Amino acid sequence: EPEVTQTPSHQVTQMGQEVILRCVPISNHLYFYWYRQILGQKVEFLVSFYNNEISEKSEIFDDQFSVERPDGSNFTLKIRSTKLEDSAMYFCASTGTVFEVYGYTFGSGTRLTVV
Amino acid sequence: GQQLNQSPQSMFIQEGEDVSMNCTSSSIFNTWLWYKQDPGEGPVLLIALYKAGELTSNGRLTAQFGITRKDSFLNISASIPSDVGIYFCAGQLPGKLIFGQGTTLQVKP
Image (cartoon, rainbow over all chains, first blue to last red; front, side, top):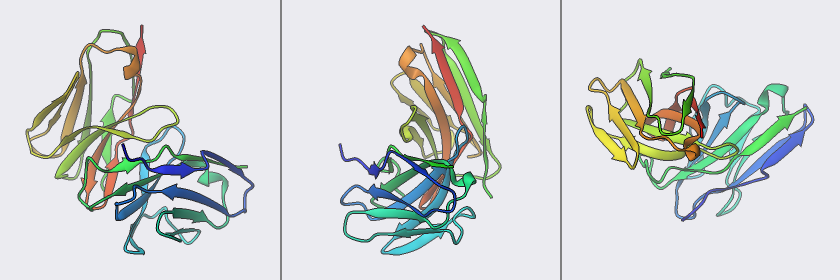
């Protein structure tokens, strides 16, 4: 079964440092997403990306965040200057269409710890 | 913004017991979803509901979409140890999901 792959599984970074989280979405999917889950809390939408543009972003996705699809397979989330409150699990997801449900596939996540 | 309120927050039950959890929203969603999350993993879709009043089963799981499209429940019958995890309801909007706070289920063998 096709998978969304995320690397690394765990990243520890110093406050103020830049971090890049990487995702390889399912190959024939066109829509890509990042979600965040602070420990013990709900999963929150960050951003959606289609046709090399941000489609929608939440209030959480401020100027410190950016996304990029640098080549035909990777989808990255960059945090420019990490803060302690950025510590969370970050999930990448992808779909073939914007209304897709059963194909809405999440990766296993990257646990980001900012110290 | 849209918010989903999920209850209970946690449940600790004996193996074999039935479980029920529910979710309410102040907004209408056209599609309602139930996910399970195992530790260190991403959410995995269990059931999707599309029609108001719809009752859908997936093995031991049964979910219903409320007539008002603002609520849903999930039932798990005859729980087993591998049912342990966090269960999330989610409402689907074009291109994104709005999640509830989750129900943590623990099953005692």
